Length: 344
Image 1: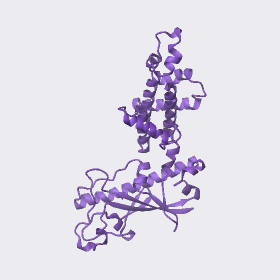
Image 2: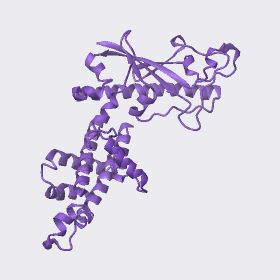
Image 3: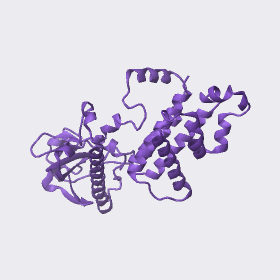
Image 4: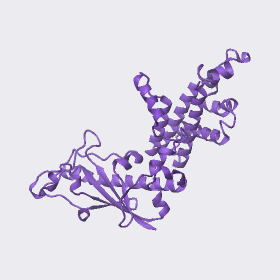
């Protein structure tokens, strides 16, 4: 078990249009010896500045005792995590060629740890800024944005070091590029994707609504808005199912429209009469065999619909994170199946 030094740089001047930088007068705190010590959730964070925080290169070499306004545009944060095993350390940063070596449990632990550290660092930084605003009247200071950890880990340039070793970049969320929640299996843009994008860019078509809703759901889950994530992902399923059951949706014409016994009855009408849950529970298994729609996937999608109903109609206050991630993956997969069925 070895301790891990963690460092990050949090910018204060590019969060939104109203933000600006802290102002020091004829003095500037330099290095860890002048650091603020702020504890959050049992983790001690050192908040400090050095000359690299000052954006003006010419200003960095000045004698600060002569200057009334010294404005750093970023804050440095340092913390130490004790008792990490080599396997745990390995999951804090990895490359695509090692993707198959990942342990799902250790990967989840790494994500949880880095999420905790980022949110603790943001909270500690905002505590410092709140004092500067209220005690010194620096009204232009606003709280640092506490957004998606997978975005902030890069925005804050989170790095780690074991002992006297080299600093390395911490980013356990890279796994999300490979683990595409049941979609194509890889989120990276390929050459074929680029051709599709070029064609789309030349057109006047909007973005895909199902894809937008699915992406929104994942963003909400990462921001700990788990109930909203469940509502959003089931909304994506509703749109996907509506497209699937449309007259040009694929199975409607192939399986229903040519059957004279069902003359005048469309798949869309069945979906409308049955509603979302009954359609998924009873109608889809009749249209898709178990190879295409396995029992575990079918059950998980039904659970997602039930959780959405509990949130919307029964006032359910929370859905566990592990469950939400499973539900999002399952609904992603079914949306893909429905889209594939619509393809010519």
